[in-house]
Length: 539
Image (cartoon, rainbow, N blue to C red):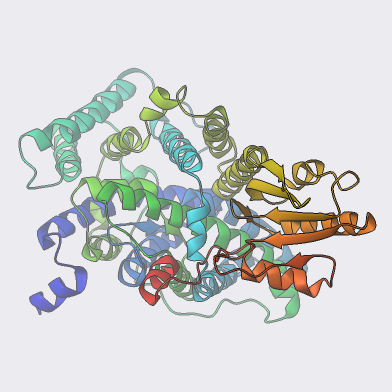
């Protein structure tokens, strides 16, 4: 049995490391899940159920061993609006109170279905389109967000928005315990790596607080975590098109935010572990987890960069680490809540502060003046949008759009022309560079149909047509030459471009040569890729 489990969860990392790392992550998940539940306006157990279910299912069915998923703040911010509007809708329809939670469960199910469709259409490869400055901005912004999320732990009541800040002896005790936790995590690995330093720090600080009877905030001060096993139930919402129209916009946003955060975290873990996850499989795992969540009373979730960092730095690399984290969390809920509720929040806060330090890309300060100004702008922009909006999808999409516009602007200036007038009276143009929507104007301005000889050749040997705008520019140029009675020839154009121009009629004569290039317009796939390469790209 042990060998079967070991083979299932991977042979790279010892089972002991995965189990201990999973225990550490489970302890850190407790206050996070409770806090995100309160943000979303749902009972704490709804967030705890989501955390353990998403963690287990994505660990088994996802595409990134070692990555931790659970209830997240990014989704909680979206869910709070849905719960509020769902409550109002339920009262207006005469369905009674508590319908906001039911609409949330239905939206989470649809969210999961959309994410599985994303995987079915193999759209995970789109993560490759995210530039590195966007990744750096995302990581830095998220590190700051995690740092800000620890501030309520320094209040008299972490769950009350208007609670007063700690002061006097309670503040001193809190700060000292946080610093002790951070010191243990920092220096213990220099003595031994047999056990995760984060786990040792949590246990040591917890024992010190219990035996010294220190007056400090504990997990119980956030919310009780005791509960039973979640029951299977259909969301109690009307099965009508009106209900679908109501939850669909929320589900789309939840699915988009969840996938972006998950795939970005996957990329980060890939870099840290020097391994490669599978984006499409991770998308399927996230979708499956959210479908199950909706039927078992969870608020849904996605990858958690903070807990994933804890797991990786604690030695967790295999699927067993994520699965055991979910199992341990379930045991806390069912059997060990009196013990877990005694853990001081200072210990968990210290762990998260170390996560912030390890997550933030401090090298950004060193390279910010060395990289292109556009990349520096994108890095700062994504960081600021992440911090001030907490909308990860908006930050990443905005960063990608700005990066694409900057790239298009730069590429538009890379096309240039040389020309020669041959002895036979034929003028030959040699365009060099990419021909696409950003460079078509320069392409058109470089030609002189009114003064060119009766026969002109365009040789695309050193140029590439990137999109339909490039093809349209060639067709319009042919019309200008035709209006002046000039015969236009095109050489060294790819076959698919030539076929499209042939369909336009006899405006331009495309010469088919043996050394014509082979590439596809507006297509990232290469026709000569083998099955293994195509499969790798799809994953």
